[in-house]
Length: 198
Length: 87
Image: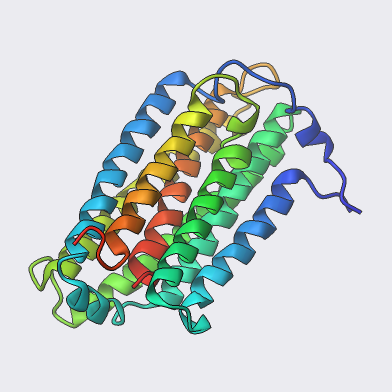
């Protein structure tokens, strides 16, 4: 039987402002605009080089892309649970969920680095062709955001472990969580765009 | 055993991701593959906006802003990918 958990039941009332610090939402939207421009540049450049893009897309490891997509989705869910935990004052639970999310972020990094290692081993660089220029720069831009997100979540986890957040004041947890969900959201578009659509 | 809303959303996101991954094997036309996969991507992203970012219960412009972003970017990508579109 599906029921609402007590932790989630706390957060059902309507709010006037998004979770976390307002500044992070301005930053998130700016990041989404930057990624959006990048996505559209890829899509419209591909429209003039369809055969090239379709050919080299087949060289990508789609299974690695799938693993990384699942990794980020589950990681994002762990962060949701961390926020739910701190909303009911469960600091230890919050810390545990956050480190789980960070660990999955680490798995994403390892899988992505293994993909890059294969490309580098094949002598592929940014100047190999237009497809790889977009693939490497777009995925590396996202990769840097994953690293940044892991640093933010680690800082939040360390503060939570010291009892720095409470039921009344946990803006920092929500702020870090919102950034991490943005990293997930961007990958949800990036994965089909670069690995699947042809 | 209890399931929070976020647990169910997680399962939906995983299922849609597996469909996206398998889509090229479905024998769809180029246009249908592009539209189908993009639609799934927008739905997944909207679920993240609503239930992970928790904007579904926030009044004001943030949720419409992100939904508009997804529809605009998704629509333009579709236009660029469909034969005779952005080329």
